[in-house]
Each structure stands twice: as structure tokens, then as C-alpha cells.
Length: 194
Ligand SMILES: C[S@@+](CC[C@H](N)C(=O)[O-])C[C@H]1O[C@@H](n2cnc3c(N)ncnc32)[C@H](O)[C@@H]1O
Image 1 (cartoon, rainbow, N blue to C red):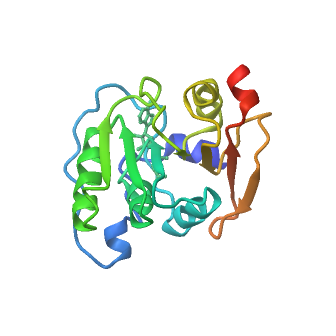
Image 2: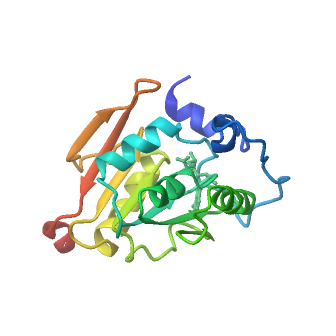
């Protein structure tokens, strides 16, 4: 089964490899309930090592505002907060938003992160200096004009596993697990004219 097919077919709460498990803690996900509308891709977490790779690619530091579009259990926003940045996670699945909040509290970074129950396609992204993605190729490409329009010049976009079609990345890194790539783009002045 190829990667894209796997993401579409995976069970919505395939919550293996959670942050708390990784740290040997026991917090568990809240019971599922129906989301406001069907998500465009089901939940699958970015491995924690890949979160670090993505943070390194975007050179996330204090002062950055990192938006994770489709935030799952909050691990990317929390990873950004651990580097001194602010993290904002957006997800259509309210159970995941609740779980992300619980994880942020457990990590004592709740004052550095915010989790928003909203559609990524209607969320205003203009405050972000870094946007992270682990979606699907067609969703990345649907987001591209929005990223170009709303993000400031110099903002970085990092995607786990999937590229942006003919928008060539500034950096690619083979991630340490599963032999996939991570991609990083920078918003440039020409994107504002597109
Ligand atoms: C593959 S998971 C990635 C989770 C997290 N970013 C990570 O890398 O660990 C994709 C997430 O996007 C969410 N999602 C899908 N479509 C969405 C939409 N239109 N708006 C907000 N969230 C969405 C899903 O609920 C899921 O949690």
C-alpha cells in the first residue's frame, strides 16, 4: 500500500506512538465523538524524531509562531513551544484538540500553545512565521495559494512526506524513519505577486 493510500485508509484514532507513550506516561485519548465535518485526511502522528527534523529545517526559535495545520495530538505545536516559540494547532477533530490541550498541560507548555477547533482552509494564517503540514499532496496544493497570500515574506512552510507540486522546496531532508522526505519552502517576494 503506498503512503498516500495508507493515510486515507488508516483508522481515525490510530494513536500509536503518542508523546505520552514515548515518555513512558499513561495519559490516554478522550473517547471519540463526531467531528463538525469530515476531516480531509485521517489522523496519523508525525514520529517525534521527524518533528525535530521539521523544527530544525525551519530553524524554529524563540519569537516564531508555528501553526500546525491539522494538529492531531499537538506534538508539533508542543515541540515548537519547547524551543521557545509559540505554537498554534488547528484541527477539525475536537477529540484531538482536547487531547492536544491535555498533552500541552502535561508538558507544562500550555501558556505557549493554543489549539483551535477549526477548518484549516478557513483559518487566518497571517500571524504564522512557520507553518507545518502532514496532510496529503492534493491538500498541500490546495493550501498553496492561501499560504502565498497570507504568510509574510520570510515565513517557512515545512511538510512531512508530501511536496507542493511544482513549488520547488528550498530544503529536503530524508527523515530518519520510514525513508520519506521532509520539505521546507520559504515565502519570497514573488509569491506575493502571484
Ligand atoms: C496526518 S494527521 C497529522 C497530525 C499532526 N500534524 C502530526 O503531524 O502529528 C492530519 C490531521 O489533520 C486533521 N485535518 C484534516 N483535515 C482538516 C481540515 N480541513 N481542517 C483541520 N484539520 C484537518 C485531521 O483531523 C488530522 O488530525
